[in-house]
Length: 141
Length: 396
Image (cartoon, rainbow over the protein chains, first blue to last red):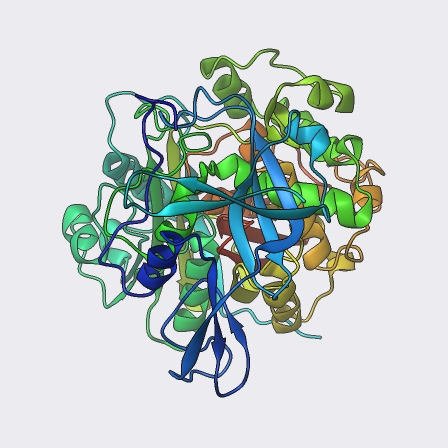
């Protein structure tokens, strides 16, 4: 991150549903849950299964590969951390394991033209500071 | 099928100003309530049910009765974003039909413009109590407009819908706005570039705010508000104006799901329930008041309520039938909509107000002989968690 540029809004804790997910990003691991009762994939993280209500769930680590489900390119943001970025891409990415994340698509020169729905992407981690969480962004695979 | 005639909109008022400095949202609510009750020929103390979203100066169900000076027997604080007023109208009709209340008051007031609230482009603040939603969404710089932009992008990818097709929605609402003096004043006061009818090319040529959404596909940020009075059939038969009957309703929420189809809104659940409740079909509807936060919102409402098949909305809106003086389909947002008349943040109440004006014969873009209208609200954010509620209304 450029020195002196305002920090993006960060996840805040205590928040017991998502804390383990963000803790794992310090090791550059993208975590998701599955239900031990019905095998449902649970994301974003919660303490219960969203399909059957079971409290018996497991954490898994994604390979970090997937496809762009959809995206938008933001031309105008008034937020201090984003207003001077130039056009940047917000997206939903479908990971190959079967869960959908909100994220940014980076390392494209022209986000409107260089991104498309269905395009293959892979993880690109963005550290937020020494000992802090990292943000799982994606780039063309 | 014989339709229910148990509860009706009997009084309406739309606060005329879109730029209202020095006035509070609560004052807009109270002033609108008085005018709507007067419109109905009812008195302040006739109100025995109060509906309030609690989103105005943080005064909700606990404080609103005190502020207004009412002692209602029934209080409903359903608050699900811009569609709250359709939820509330449906709830009021049900409770009145069951005998729990006789005169329900819905009010709305907002000073979003005068407060300089950057509703569409502000992005997450990273403040307040942390929630799972905030923690998974705040870091990405999502603006409200880009949230809807993701839905439009997927619609274009999945069905081949074009920018030009989407632009027809903005063209039709502006066509109606230019016939509504309050909408013309709104666009003038808010310093719109070109207070005139527009073409699809004008929409495509307007600047991108969040690709693929252009400026003229995005609603304005205004001040404003209004009030609706809903009463039992016994009271409605003695009111000053013709009753506008609430004959059916449906409500639902939808949210981001793993593998889910983002182009399908909560209206796919609530719309068919509302039509079944009312005993009418989309083909019979004369006026469609569909929440136009953005062009894509209207596209989803049209498809999901069944005016055309899913994915065929692009062709449907391009046929010109959305204008009030064209036949073959419902007239869309005949007040000018959120795109060209007013959008103070929660537009749902205006859908009920213009539906009532149409079914009374009082619209500035009056559909000849209008008998049936749908007010379909959409609240929250279409690309993540949102609500869609439909209220179906019939002329007396």
